[in-house]
Length: 330
Length: 224
Image (cartoon, rainbow over all chains, first blue to last red; front, side, top):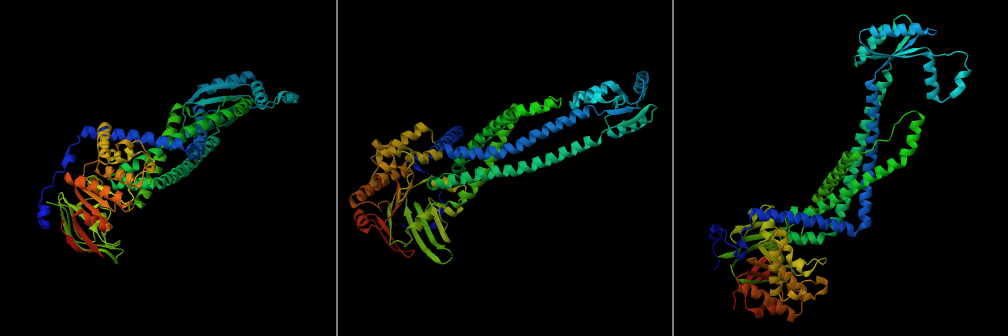
């Protein structure tokens, strides 16, 4: 009656009746695609069925993304500023007060002839005063002065952008007769750069922190979803579902949350920009600048949404991995 | 040819409690066998070992000649697809229709929808519930729910059908109906192992009975 165990073990794997029909690789791929499509739709529908809690999760993701994105954009405009100064790392030669216009023009010609000089622009004392008045918006106040207190100046653009080279040129030009002082303002450019670097680090730090926040938000939401579908997970595990099969709907939920959160973040940023752009434009105009708030643009928006999806997916993956390990069918 | 072989199988929980001690038996292909004993006698442990929910502490469990200990974690799902399991509380999902419940194993295996629908209807037809395919499990009686659970277990045409107290919550008439269903599947070649403590019922059915007490086989009664 009972066969020896050895004999049982030696037997070839028996055929399993009707189940032995082979499933081709192609139809298995089709099945895999079909399941992905089904699960993606089903996960989306589950989100829609709980509109408020889904929206809150997405909002939490969006808010966590908006802050670093805002900093990043701001940093971009600081860098743009830096570049515009870089292009014109000019030096200013202040001429001796009371130089006649012939003297000024003569000196300008001479500086133009110096090696290492690319361009020279003359600003007479009168032009200087006018610009000063415009820039400060003080109107007629300066006309109360008896004499123009400003010296004529020459704006010199060096051929070399290298700061050390420019420094040497400034020193040389400063010794020319009729030049009171040569000023090369590299210090504040340096400072601007350092501020930029600091801003970059801050942004990176915040991005990492808030990115982690996104992971936690999604992870917690997925943890609840796993808990809610515990019974279903137990049943499908008992009847032969692989881990990937069980994980899939939760990963899709995570991706949907990420998509929603990313899109909301772009919307929030766009709204915020619209809200701030009028007062900031007015402020910039009052300084004679045409500065406008930077925008994400199409590429930036896509990148933002992609980051959001990726972060949410990772959050979901970690949460599902942790909690599925706890669920074992009875 | 043996479908199930237990060789000196022992199972301890938490190092002390011995659910199964040195269990030896063999079930042939195409047999229908009852596993009986009081609760705590080890019936559930036997089924858990067969579904790879537990691993034996000692000995070997072979199904269709294959040592279950040789299955890796990744292979277990594919092994489970080859056996049908019926639970006492039928383990239906209440958020989807009868049809979708029965289709679940086929969905997991990626059977094309048209093919799956045909097989689901065939399984529902066998348990006499074809007309309720659109119903939700909650709208069905206890006996009907259990029949949906059986349809789900056999939709895959498994060579081995395991059942854990399938009539535990049913009255005698319904229990007899359910048992007849298992006998029908056995008649077309399915090996059936059925855990039950309903001694009166299984005595009437005249199949082989394995009696367990405190994790040991105390009687192996051949079919009358």
